[in-house]
Length: 496
Image (cartoon, rainbow, N blue to C red; front, side, top):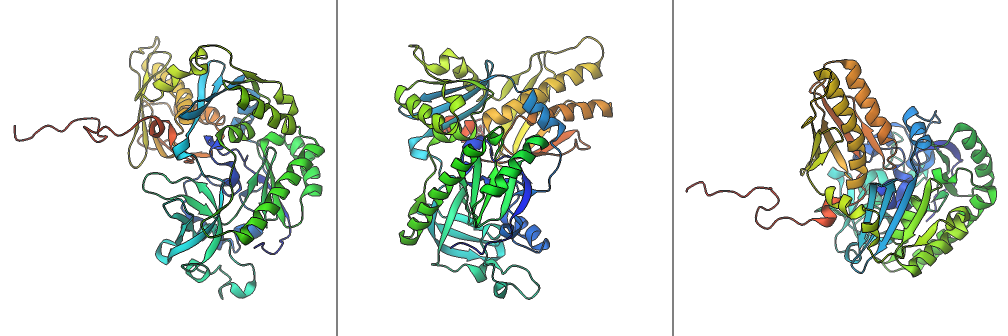
């Protein structure tokens, strides 16, 4: 099951906190560290083949070491004080992240649709589609998952390579009825099945362990001096036959803390490997922790002043976990004792409701219209009631800067994923357009979910992609209207 041990390579890695995301499936994060989350499997495979090697031999998700971007460093240094709220309800569990009193992230899970991202299954190949460079794999979840060619763990034996040195085609590696060990990287959404990979990984508080890999990765969000310190420690801790990525949470971690984290993940992998040998097809061999522990593990950091939980037993579980992995944070856990619901006390409920509306007001009187279509999210910026004081260009610039701040927040709060198009109010001065785009990218640096922003187009549109890691706020708290079937308008009788 384990591949031949490649020579370890050191690479700069994006932080493992992939989003709401981050919290929505950290176990499989090592595969997505270098992309924007929008590429399909065949595209990744073509890129991989052009490089003349497999993901595993070159390290997964690695990038060349580089300086931390200006936007990223600003986001780290200027991050406002945060508070995390956890509400353990009978129907659903919700987690809210507040920057001062402003809701910026929201995670929710219901018992009937809990995320399976990060889970590892012994699946069975149902069929292979060469034209799609993909295979459909039954993992016992009612709907087949999709395994793209770029996520297949190809044999490293040179006898299996094509004559031109490229990797074999997927239909030569996978056959219907074959059992494969796969990990879920993305939950099923709509009509699409779960996304799968054979490049397995296990996430801890400080590290992501990649069995069979050889990459030594360190989050690019850390300063170069800290990365150098961690690199020296990491080179001595990585067990043979494994790759390790150090996450942003590893900043300031001691050698002992990192050693404990790596050892714990290695023990978990040994159990997973042992269970995989005796498991029946479609049986899970590893399951990620529930929502609360995932969020605490992946999101909670020293910038959080308080973690408030409305359930005494759950608070004790979280406190015990933090006592082991982050003792300095354990004392920040408290129990919500007020008779009023925790989300109401901190004014989070009203902010969640506002995030479900199409119109979002800006401080000076402008507003956004946020809509989702089948193909993409569309955000329209309007000046509304804002008339300014000096001239039209200055009015539009100020309105667009406010919009840039709010859009970055809405992306995180609503957990928008896929293609996103933003129509800012037209500006004449190129310097103003550049200022708005720079401001937007700076605010977006607070977002742990991977995204990619294009330059403003000739039509004045900003196009971007953001990794789709969950169903999002709208899908979680709304249902399709039975009368209009989601159109937002009733069709009149044209023959009246």
